[in-house]
Image (tube, rainbow, N blue to C red; front, side):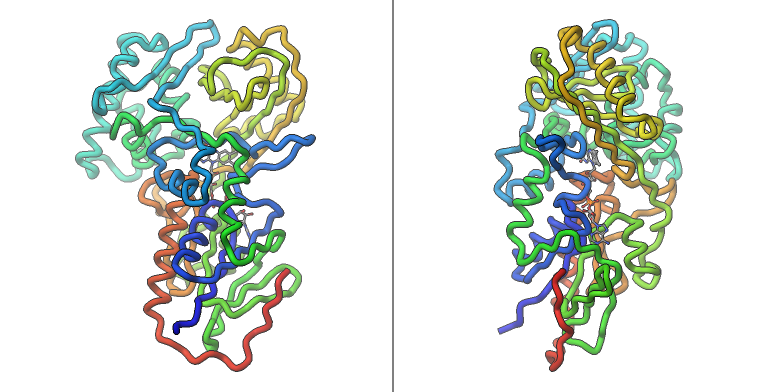
Length: 451
Ligand SMILES: Cc1cc2nc3c(=O)[nH]c(=O)nc-3n(C[C@H](O)[C@H](O)[C@H](O)COP(=O)(O)OP(=O)(O)OC[C@H]3O[C@@H](n4cnc5c(N)ncnc54)[C@H](O)[C@@H]3O)c2cc1C
């Protein structure tokens, strides 16, 4: 009988967990190594003053099919809330509110009726947005039509977008989706999101979110693995080719754990660079070209009434979206939040509450009971314009990489991309281990020391 393969997964974010589950299901023994005390990586939760909060509001869209499948697989699909149809409330400071809502018409006509009634755009503005959407549809049909180094900012200009259309349409939906200034995002990446969410099928852009703290999803996945080692930073990986099982992990404090058949390195780009020392022998290029972009979330507990919606966009506000987690608990997210990262906790709390009260009149005069701020300077990673994202395979067949930032066919660094990358990495590792010539087991295996 073939010996069970022993795989190490480094990084307990969604990418590492997805890869780990696939490898486990394929029959391997899987051990997970995570630097932090928490599971879930950038999609996690922790206790603040006795309350479990997410490190920041996470949403997914119905087109994020692999993320939903991941939740289903770990028995947690029931905790995901997904809209029956796409419906987004967009609030202006003067009290005007608009809905963008999918109808029963096929895409891309499903938003036409609500768009025609959308109060935040003039007829001219609507025509401008319409022109851009047609251009996106055409470039989907003819992908080579535009230059590869075109940014989203360039594209918005080229398609005639102005201050009004940016404020009322592009900013509220695309700043959170891309989490970077438009001049930093490639046209191809932005129009991938536009096409996948809004132009492909009517249900694709339905919003979804977890109704339980995010770390619960990660925990459900980790529970299926053979070993989970938290607070265990991996500082290096080496291959001892003389051995039957060649992978050796080096942990902080001069400890090594050997005898792995393969390893999935599911860590962010900079951590990967440090861990490998020199990534080029692995055929991994461009790690230095990835830049982190921040998200700041302000959590507000108040004694006012429910705001009656799960979430709403706020026009002309630094907090793009307000989410009601439960009645009395709001989470406000500031995406592409460079300038807000530097504000003090008190300033952020005051700013968020002021903004919320200005958009939701029912909360004026109510009392703020408690607050918390979560800052994530490295919330998402984006390669510099023109740089390519690496695939999950490396020049070393027993080493694969995963992460929302790796190449997943156009998905930006999101939960969906993370899960997809994990699946690709697991598949690549299984393929290369299956093709490996059998070696004799070693007489003296390296000592295996858990941290
Ligand atoms: C506040 C916030 C809001 C977001 N909102 C959304 C959203 O609405 N929708 C969406 O889809 N995405 C959102 N994202 C992005 C999403 O969370 C990430 O794209 C996704 O979780 C990335 O998963 P990953 O597994 O690729 O990476 P990570 O989650 O970063 O996982 C990598 C793991 O590796 C560990 N690690 C690093 N170095 C080492 C080492 N040397 N040894 C061992 N372990 C190591 C890290 O501690 C981490 O746990 C948001 C992110 C943040 C922070």
